[in-house]
Amino acid sequence: MKNTLIIGAIIGFIVGVLFIFVQPLFGMSPLTDRHAAAYVKLGDINPSMAIIIAWSAHLLVSTAYGITTAIALLISKKPAIFALLIVVLGWFTTVIAGPANQLIVRVVTSKSFPSIDNLPALNFNLDAKLLLHLIFFLFIGLFLLAYNRISSSKTD
Image (cartoon, rainbow, N blue to C red; front, side, top):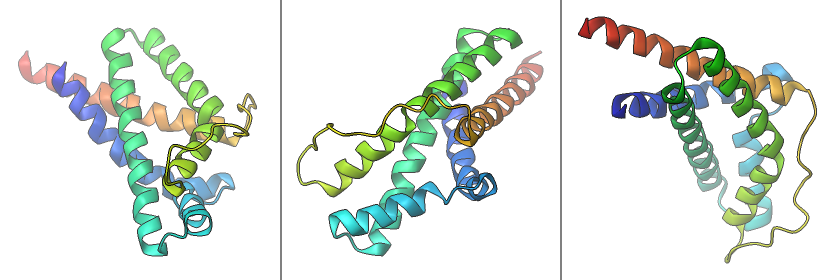
């Protein structure tokens, strides 16, 4: 179990890096660029520091997504149930992404905990953002399944 969670974290981190480079293929500017620009504009943060903060925040979230996917695998190794859990994770994270990203920007650019008033609406659209999140979780899930098969074959 511990190894699955650690591997999930590592895979989440790696897929998080890849995510930033794939985002433009879906017609979006990279999340880290958008966050860094907001940090500079709203928080008067040095551009170099802003990009470091943006990448750090993104990779922490991606690592958490990897761990969450690993937990989903630990809940059920049955392919259909695991696939359903991945779809739910992809959908849920898409729904909350707008407000969550805005809250991260506000936390970074405020000197105290920011107001949560006027956050963007939840995103229930079937759009490129949903597809990108589903692909993100799918890749983590596939790598976790491969890891589990390899590690279980070594113990047989």
